[in-house]
Length: 272
Image 1 (tube, rainbow, N blue to C red):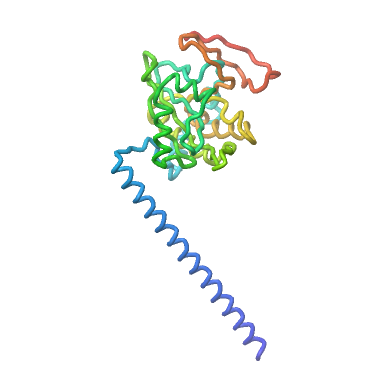
Image 2 (image 1 turned 60 degrees about the vertical axis):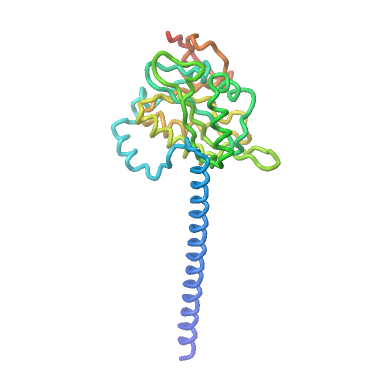
């Protein structure tokens, strides 16, 4: 009789410990949630008193509705699912009359860079540097955030509006070291851009994201771009080799991805 009683007591003790552990976890989660809510309220009050309006796109809570809409665009339709590879200047996107969204990845420091696409965007418009640094000052640069704003103040097209979408996909440490592209943050950003592009019937234009960053994963990056943009019917153009060009110069469309100098491709001249 003693053995069964000891066994039942042991099971009871184990259950009590499990329930106590679960209760402690709930208390910790409630405490964490209250702290986050309080922090968010203080930030919103700070923004309001400073007259700051966030340009970040809203979070994507669920993709179920989007996936239902995407049933009308099949992945076997190459015209809708293929990425166009363009030899030209991504800051002057090859677009017809539709709006165009130029995508660039940034870190969470709020310090605008120099050289390459940073300088090219600054030459195109004063907005990228201004809006990005302001967002950094106002603590509005979390991983996965996307700042979206127009860039037609210095140069513009006759038809359609050009916008820049800055995806916060990297982190900068206190010692100024920079992480590689966080694919989870990039994916979250692309999901947000998809919604805007779909609603506004805009095309999306990207450089070869992350090509000079640590641990660069081009194939994973391209897969995300195809999954969240091209395969969903958003006209998507990739500019694998960034170059400064005259905005009036017609671009060249590559028939296949030009990822290395040894990759064979045919340049097709497309009238602008």
